[in-house]
Image (cartoon, rainbow over all chains, first blue to last red; front, side, top):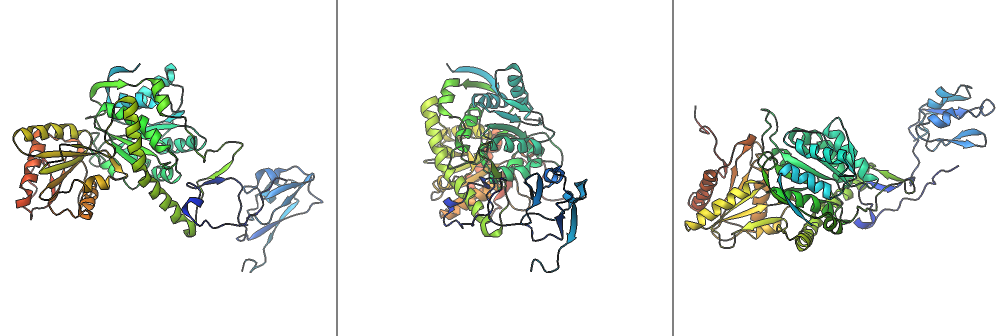
Length: 103
Length: 396
């Protein structure tokens, strides 16, 4: 799987260390982004048929391929539920997050 | 070999764009800019200009398309006017903040309401704070030369800021003059291909136009400010280099005429400067020491050049086709600020003229100079004056 790693954010110390305008190499991630998720997709891997419909429709690229099937990167999944809705095999269920998860 | 053609300001802009070899052109036609885009469309259609010409549904889309093309390394050109310029206002800030070195011609035209297709400078001056470099041409030759220079200024790595070239609607866009068309090889030698470290391609994917939190956002704005200030030196260098290669220099941020020993100086911008120059000569023959300072660039603002106009007992006037309702003209605000910072103690008057396309005649300019010569004795009079208002300003 090609997935950028989280990198430590280095605060620029001079103006010249900033990029020239808001333009920077793609895939430079400095923090995870998922803590406002209300529902969490759970894959029952025994039901997954590997059709990749969820992988293709995830708006955030949070699904990734694992062997012939898929897995979810919960650091970036926003819980939108599109994967569960698109899954013809009904292998993905949306489960309410525990209250206080983000506090 | 360079050649001489009889061209309108609009056509001169189209030839300037062609010589600069833009890869992508997107523009929406609007009076009085229409001829620019028609000419460029003809050039692309006939194959004399190898560029992609995009048909867009609005000015907002035209400038948006320019940003996308610029991001992948295309040299881009667009043109607009008046309502079109204010319709793309959102994208103007995007383009300057995104540091896309787009070059755009704007035909200065009045803003509605009342609806008018005629010229004044309220369109571009109302967008002085959009982060663009703004330059005002006086004639068709300067218009052509400015397009070529604008790419070199905008694409300079120290600047990376879009440039808006303003031509007075009709007075300049539709007036025909002899224009020297430089040789393509000479232009190619003057204007290297567009290069920029931000250019994105499949091997170098980039995140563009991202957001930034209060912790970092201000630094990006500071960077823009520093880049536009830096453009002052670049403009001066480009003017000198252009003069060396093509034999035409315009003086950088301003172009002065008989100011050294002047008792009064009129600061103005755009095509009316030609008439002012003629009146300066007339007044000089009568022993009245008048002078002209033509502002070429409004951003970056020629602060040092304006400060240098300040002299004891020298009244200074600002003639502009603009008014910021309820205060004064935007050009006057800028000029007056530079003069006051320089400790100027003599009167500085603001002459608002030419709104909605009204002519500014030799007689009008003569009376402006007479006002300036009398200004020292009449200090109490309102510094903001409307030139050639058709009716009495007060009374029932």
